[in-house]
Amino acid sequence: MGIASDSGRGAHAEYTRRLGARRETAAVRSRHAAIAANLRLLVFTTGVVLAWLAFGSRVLAAGWLVPPTLLFVVLLFAHDRLLAERDRALRSVAFYERAFTRLESRWAGGGTQGERFRDPHHPYADDLDLVGEGSLFELLCAARTQAGEDTLAGWLLGPATPEEIRRRQEAVRELTPRLDLREDLARLGDEVRAGLHPEAVCAWGTAPAVIAAKAPAAIAAGLAALAIAGLVCWLATPLGPLPFLLALLLEAVFWNVYRRRFQAVVRAVELPSRDLGLLAHLLERLEQEAHQASRLVELRGVLETGGTPASACIARLRRLIDLLDARRNQLFLPVAAVLLWTPQLAFAIEHWRLRFGPDLGRWIDAVGEFEALCAFAGFRYEHPDYAFPEIFEGAPRFEGVAIGHPLLPGDRCVRNDLTLRGENPVQIVSGSNMSGKSTLLRTVGINTVLGLAGAPVCAKELRLSRVAIGASIRLQDSLLGGNSRFYAEILRLRQITELAQGELPVLFLLDEILNGTNSHDREIGAEAVVRNLVTSGAIGLVTTHDLALTRLADSLAPRAANVHFQDHLEDGVIAFDYRIHPGVVTKSNALELMRAVGLDV
Image (cartoon, rainbow, N blue to C red; front, side):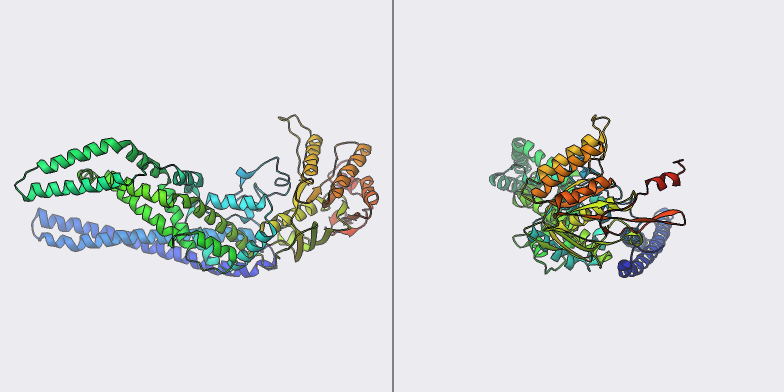
């Protein structure tokens, strides 16, 4: 099976090498784990026999049980470690197998599709296949967290500022060769994506203080010390149990006064505790990277508080939570009661939350941005011939050299040159059915989305200004809503017209404009809509197979031009070159297509 294009051959070779190595590692660890399991069973059996000889027949001394017991414990930990290493290797295998589906154009339907970001009222998301099965989001997304998915979707659904675009481009260039980083993030496991809930963690971190005063913490420490002293007096002096009992009474009073607040702290930390552990793993890996790009340096700085790495801060909280969980041990429970274990740790956890809780949102956002940048970096690694667009400010422009559609396999992706700017902001695209008109609109739109998000684009060169995209390509009638396709289209045209009155100039992409009405009304309506958009400073493309609409270019001259796609017959089969040609198309293939499917026309 061939790869998508020559551009991916370097990635293909490296992925092949690494995939083979990870599969071998997984196989070796599986064999070693099986050996450790068998040895553990053998040692356990030997221990049972020795125990019977020591305590049953009394042939051996009990000391003979020490070596097999120690060896069993060692094998227990070794077996768990080998299984963990095997699972990490298998996650690496899955990471590279998924990469091959992208290189071989088999990726659609197997990744994260971003359906939760779908908005039927968005001015271009559905039209340009940004989310859903086979979408740009599915192709790009390798995020392990909800925050990473949210960040990536946000970047695709709205343009960044020119300065931010350039900073992201710089960061992506630096991250592109860091394949080890992307693999390590993938090795963290599916439980990361399932477990990290940013809203719950941030809500816990910023909630009002439950126990803000320092005095109760000091009192709890003093009472615990007093109880220990009372116990020592009972055991070592003739004073008896009275001091110890008095200390327990004071502790009971203290617990009764603050009980609800202690329980509130304990209950509140239970929900985010697992999430914070997962976040710590991500942060710890990201903190190992050194950066030069300005945006990456800033993000790295966000992952520290007072000079302490965020992962270390969360690890401190995890230790407190683990100590808190010790109270569940029935043997430790009496000791915990004497030491006021739950109150002591509730104070420590609340102190941590009040100090670091407000930083949790910043840490999660930084992780999300790192993941989105890594998604773009992986995209660039697999397509080294894709260019970073040159971003301009001021008048709208789209000047592409050899632009193609990034969702198409390389052997089916035909590239074209296209310029929309200045004195020629509009092109009327005519052509036969299936000749490539709609694909051209999507090609322009999706590369604009990528470029304005800070990602590389499927083009040799692209000069682009910051624009608001408005597309009318994939509109449907709605039985439930009682709307026809024509009504849905005119609503979208109104949305695009209103968008053109905003701060940003508009890039409009109109496919078969007003196809649902008669030719007379269609010609008048289309000219009015396009003229208004051009007057507002917009640039764009209008496709049609109705040759009457090509007169739009004459009425809007010199600000519009006609281009077209051609087709021809090869051995009785209609063939397309998918190349843009100047002027108006001179023939239609509709009758040939009808005859090709068996209609008698």
